[in-house]
Image (cartoon, rainbow, N blue to C red; front, top):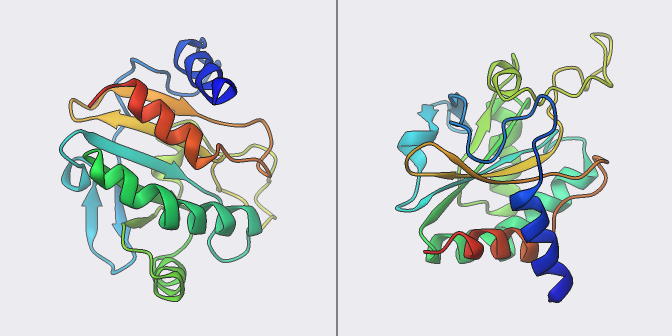
Length: 180
């Protein structure tokens, strides 16, 4: 537990990477289509205390993303809801891909589609490792952001490798560190 608390404090206090939105910044706009085809915004989806926004690569072909989404669905979504936060996922996937994954895994929180990477680019998260010839072109670097009701970024959790994702315990500790 001490390691988790130390990591959360370090993440909350760490200086921003050169391009990514940082803690204290106004969150870039999020307007995308959900898995049912309905236009959504982060403001419309937020909980009474804010939103946890999950950027992920693909629910169709990325095994690390699938594992993260399944873990978030089972362990983070109910805990975040109880803390007054909405959980929202966003990827480069089409609404159909997201709808299929949500139905197969009983995901009860919004998954947003950003097939042109407009939101991903506003957040400066497009993974530069993939060129236009790659099926992964336009995918985001995996990241978790806690956005307050006022639209300010309260916490950012990222890992260097797309194969690693912050644990649910780390996410919940970051939210708890913000107070209720």
